[in-house]
Image (tube, chains in turn brown, yellow):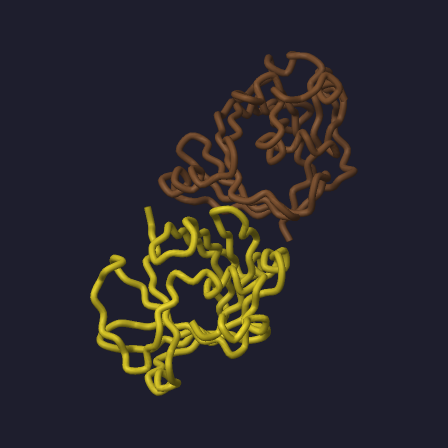
Length: 161
Length: 161
């Protein structure tokens, strides 16, 4: 079973920006987000994918991803529930690993989340100096939750975990 | 936009059985079925697909279908909401067109629905002698609805439209 094992953190500074290797705009919409499974359409430049995740809001969960034609992705994303999640994904190198730093836009403007994919939940990794608090198990930081509860609507307490 | 244009009928006899060209067992489960969009996993023998339909319970609706690996389909179908829909699809020739006659099993045993894919909603077609009443716009006959309201639970009135 393909699994995504991913830990999420908030950057405590903007120092990651000086290590960006590449940046990519992404739009994503959810065809389904109820129950245990989310079905996502993602468009990144000229590429697009259908993605299915299960298992809730934890570091390790089953994930299935299928490339789909861009034209169909544009039609499918128009069927999404609620607003799209728009972000720029920055790829940031540190200690031989690639961090994905997502800088959100629109109703989620101001939110930045740094993610690291790992081979196991307890895999060792080198903490970059800009890395702040871990939010892996806080569901509001999951993209699927940003559709219904965008960063703009978060309380001060929610913004400072 | 790929569209499925399909009309659904009940057979008024079993005479279609003598014209079956091929039969195929199918299992399907729904990863999502709320709102306007359904996301279905179908396994038919050694083949599997992810399928997305939108637009409700009418003859013509957007449909997107992607083949996926059988092993992943088996894992995905295990994530489905509710019981699987199990059926045998019989391919029946009449008047140069292929009817798909779905004979359901399990909780939907006893239900048989004949479907015809068309190029347009008002395309002409030859009615086979075994063809009965049209049910295209009756939502209970849609596979996605058979998960939550299986044929076994239908009233006599529901069984005789």
